[in-house]
Image (tube, rainbow, N blue to C red; front, side):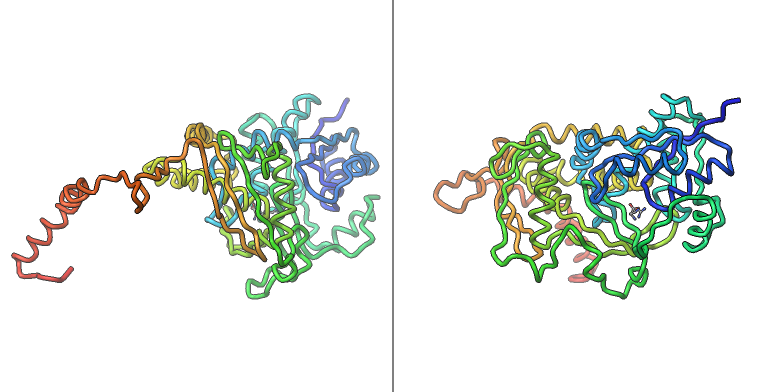
Length: 407
Ligand code: ARG
């Protein structure tokens, strides 16, 4: 009888390589591996794909998800100025749903009963994978070998791997756990687990330290059309190309490092380091354009939606009805978000130094103190009288009660 099949989210690392053998031996399954290209650095996907076959997978697929990632995921994320806990631009939260979607597609194509991932039981990524997979197909069963096996230490895992013919890395393993994609890098573990220890310079690969950043800095103009980046310094480019270019420019200038304590969904606080040069700069420019083009009430209300969006997506609910509705809100705010923003980078800083738009709500006549002033000052007095009327009434009543001057 043919064996049941499982589609495994494969990275090429030790954990997911051990997963292949473990699923074959402990669950008696045929394993189909999928590695997704979401723009992570240092990856020869053909090598990774082949490695899965060498370990014993019956099929191995490398899928280039970059365009879809930018167009379907990062575009929505930018409309929502994605930022978890006001600090983290959600690097890993955004790649998991697209990977989950492809896992489900492949499971359907290959008639697999199961999907497996290599996440540990302590992180957010396991939640994101499993909730997304269930949202896309509630009948698929999810397996989480790393959570199930009792290979607690890395040495035990390497011994198991050797005994079962899984290739073991010969170089000393990095003490860090790293996850990266086009939108940036997340670095955890090792000495970073002491929140008092300053992150060592060698965790960073996308950004210079601000000490090493070139003294001349850089000035960049990002243009947006309907909220989506469309040109850099006047040259038409895709959003994807702009992310790559901004990672390089902002990174070179030492901008985009984050060292934070983060509240995970699974209940614990963790110390997280990120480098997100392009993401942070692009979000900053996007917000600067919104400052110019969104009407005051909308501009003040939108961050509530953004925060809700960020928490939902962080919590693994990318594919959920509320998230879809919030996307609808954000999208409607981007219709006239067309224009240019100028950013100045200098030794670790990024300052917005210019913005313009055909749909700007900035009215020179209203704002100026010069002769072209069109603001009707006569309206100001009556406006203040009415605006302050409740407070004035309250103060009078307190005064009558003898509580003059006290709040
Ligand atoms: N704490 C971040 C998040 O939950 C980063 C997770 C990084 N994932 C990893 N497997 N190293 O989004």
